Image 1 (cartoon, rainbow over the protein chains, first blue to last red):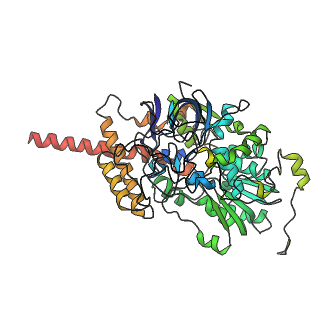
Image 2 (cartoon, rainbow over the protein chains, first blue to last red):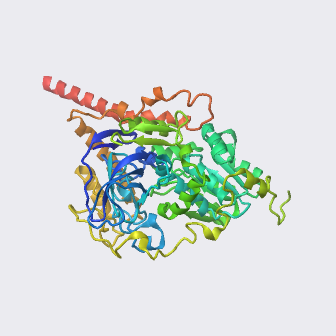
Image 3 (cartoon, one colour):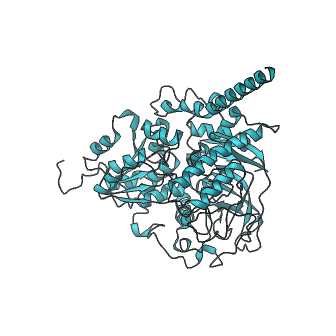
Length: 382
Length: 191
């Protein structure tokens, strides 16, 4: 089969690989019909995630058709069209039994601090991902769901991560009616977090980024007020001014490890890998939110230390809430919201790249060229 | 407004928001959100028909965190550790917990060693690594590289100039070392 493979920082190519095999009785093999590149894939692409091995196939956002099932699979059959959450999870460990699918204890031998994720280095279990023609899907009875007939492929592929993560971020904010919510980052996750904040009763939603084309999307897709932090000397002061100097009730970090806005933080992290994440957006969130407020973090950070302004968080009495999203737990509600038109994931898609051109797809997304917000990947056999 | 007990009034009343924003308030009740409360026991184990999953065969000694009690029953089998990078990775997993910086720094060092092991190996194949095609940099010419940056306030322009240095720098250094090494060898053979 054809598959994207990592060749070192900033370098990937498409190679011929063996079609994955059933390795456990509850595995399925899925033929990928559509995949996406996630902003967090860029952390791998840039060589920031420890134990990203040469030859690894990325991709935790994909949908497809079941090609083969293991002997114990009961809930899926060959030919089913499925959406697969980015989390790999067993369903039965202490964490899964309580709905923390992203914290499964039975799927990642390499680390206890993170669950299993497709195509996201060996730090998350060493599973090849879905930017390929085929992918191994462990615990097929637990993770995947059938794609409803009414749902488009583009909506479905965005329900594997970006949309649930944005929606989960708004939930972590514990928004109550009339709250002012500031979302840092106008990528797909931030845009969905902003729109989801309205669903949860926000009275005001502000989105902050430095890319004008994404801020324009925040105004049209998420009906949000926007601020381009590059146009202000100090975005934290602007947030104070616009909230009558109290600060926002809730701040959501939808940026994560490669945040821009402070050259030293960015370069020490993204270029020289001296921090697990460049916590610029997180620090701005901590400083922009009011005392006693909530900071929700859904931007992805690596496992190494980061220079977070923890003292301010303590002194302000903040609630910090975060996790990788337990995707399947969000699906029933999100399927309803998509069907009702409250969330329109496919409107985030700006580019489609054939698998063979995936290196260009990564560069366009990474360098933010051509108005790119969400690039999809189409395997050649799809 | 002075610092009083009152919250500043909303610029836009709730009724207007409800009219303007599709779905405003459909998840208004904080108790009725999918991840509230955080811990919710799932009686059906989300479709699992086991309490502890059957174990996947371990075909080589699978590296694992020493914070785990045992090898997890299911695990990825992509890219088994090999060569010097594999030895560094095995050492890191066997020696340091996830709580130790040494664990992660060794893994990052192994990643760089792995890259060079594979770059060198690729030169023995008919498809050597090619930083031009593999970086996707050609899209600068097909996807408005200049237009995407000029006339904007985007802040990443400052550090994007470092990317070619990070990608090409080690190749240039390696080529210079190789050239100088070959030169020295030729000179020593002649003398």
